[in-house]
Length: 346
Image 1 (cartoon, rainbow, N blue to C red):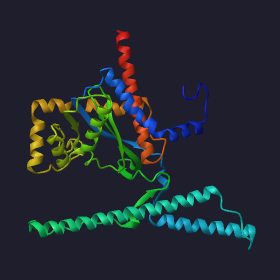
Image 2: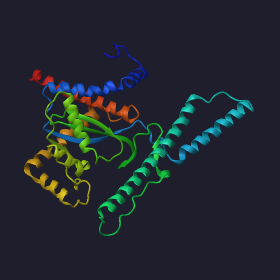
Image 3: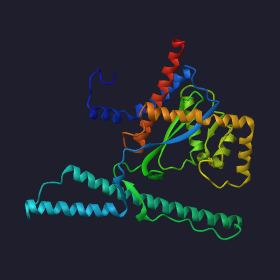
Image 4: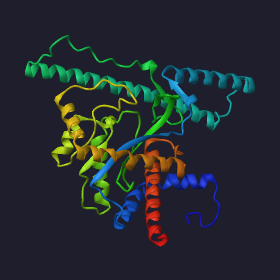
């Protein structure tokens, strides 16, 4: 329909997606409203999870802090030698556009590493000031040895990708990969009600934002009910965020320990952790939490296998987030389409 029954080239499609990025992302909310009107959205229980989706960034384009500066100098020396050979003492033409673009990418990569390091230094300084003020105000001193200073990663050891600097290199069993973490909240009918995207591998601070995003999307879709029981795996456990959600009347099931059958881990000690373990041992909670995997894991499998959306085709966090929301909207459209075929088939 968009192509008017013609066959546009890839550049036309790419320009269309970039030009209408925000509108395509908002289709997720509109499709969710269609699913809600069809009666496919039940929000009593939601399953939260994330999956890795490869970024459109080559691993060989990762640079350490020293490499961009060295490559800029080497590149400049190479160009200067070529121009001297071609023009002698005369001034030559301007540098080719692709070379200027590459040099700018290297400068941007170096500047991004500088900004990240300075932000980390400011964060560390603020943390130390806050700890000193707390001790001076309360007189509280922790027992045992004094806490060790939090290490600040060396500037030279950090890396950034010059094709897509947003995703961070994350190590897994296959080595270092460049990817985003696509997050989703799914209903019992496997309809996605929240689709968010983050960089890095830490989801510990994402429980409340994803739950709030689900509430906002449901309200936008005209659903008055709010989620009552979010189900999340141990990677989402955050005591403060769980308390904040439960203060608003939302009961959370999120184990504080990873599945030790797959990853041997040391169990956390504390009253808060033990309270959650006791809650999960209750028959009703145990039965509800057992449904988490069958609610959200097939969603990622269908997206990656049936829709073949296991890799982003755009670059940058905002662009990839729009692409992920469009992918989630497509998944919900397929659920709506399948639900419409069942009565006819019967």
